[in-house]
Image (cartoon, rainbow, N blue to C red):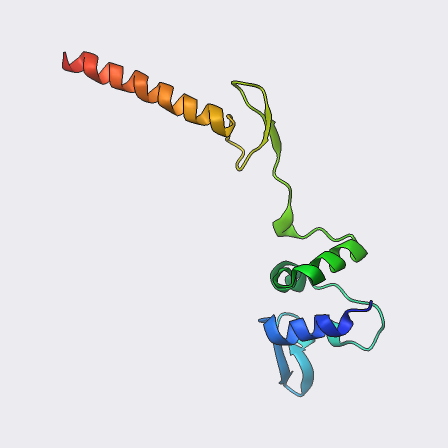
Length: 126
């Protein structure tokens, strides 16, 4: 990989697990309690899930290159599920598993519920 030095620089400057020299080990990683995998002598680029999920997103260009070359999907970049609205039937990206309505129908439904609730309150008062 061409960007190995950029990865090393990113690890040195931004990785919380990287401690430099510690316990007589150069490029010490406290997560693995051993040398950081990015400073190994082999030519291939190793995998570190902490780096992929926590450090790599700081550099967008490097992140795109890394994910395209390795076909890696990070945990924080998962797609939101597509759901059909129960009122109008259009497909939309749900932000939670309980979401039933699209944004337009959600607002309309909230207004209808408010109207109904206020009618019931006014009936009790009269």
